[in-house]
Length: 311
Image 1 (cartoon, rainbow, N blue to C red):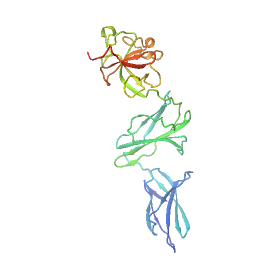
Image 2 (image 1 turned 45 degrees about the horizontal axis):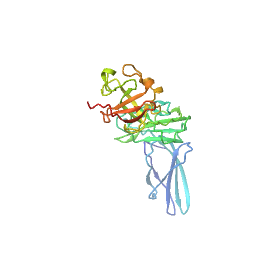
Image 3 (image 1 turned 45 degrees about the vertical axis):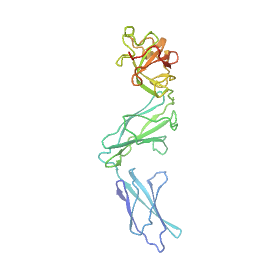
Image 4 (image 1 turned 90 degrees about the vertical axis):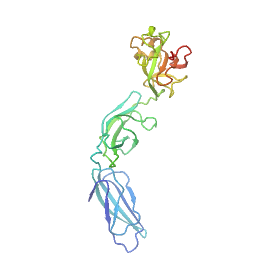
């Protein structure tokens, strides 16, 4: 049995009275039901030649079948080899701490990846703990500790036990860590966001007031960037504009009076649950512009002809 790290090489020795016309090496994890990985050895090796298999990233014991073809007859030799730990000192295995499934069905991975020498993380989601049926994976992205799984591909089943694992791709020297711990979770029912665009710098005034710019009336002003009127909301359009609908920051709940209890914090932040949002301003988008809103629906109806923050 040969022992290697991420590569396996072996000498091929044979005696044949006719030329060898084809040679293959097939391998798989010992005891696995997966099909063999088949490597076509080219050019056809002479006896005594050194054969090097492609890089193998998964450690473990492997079955090896070497087949030589001559005059239509195939001769097979069985052997085995062991792949050791392919990690380097800077390519540590990630750790999955938790998987959260939000009310919207969004899957959030809470995991730790050492960012030293990090090229990219990678994660896989499977319907089985052995990862024979991987239904979703991601690689080539920036690491953040709380990763929102892309849910819009329609390949993640609802209300089913699923399994997730992660590994780290290293930059220089290049390499790939082993797989992390496997974390199981139950997926939820996916609720598609109606308003997927989030704005953290929205300033809202309810229909409880007559003039959103009047600090004497409100004790603040919709034009004040550091005022208490700032909210995080979602819109149905990627930029603030007439015709967009306002939603709460879950992107699912319409910003209509019955849903605005959380906006009621006292002072100028009153009247939302009874009279809805009447005006809104977006600091980072035409910051002097104030929009009129239809309180009963959360629809931005027009740029206000009465109020603005130019003066």
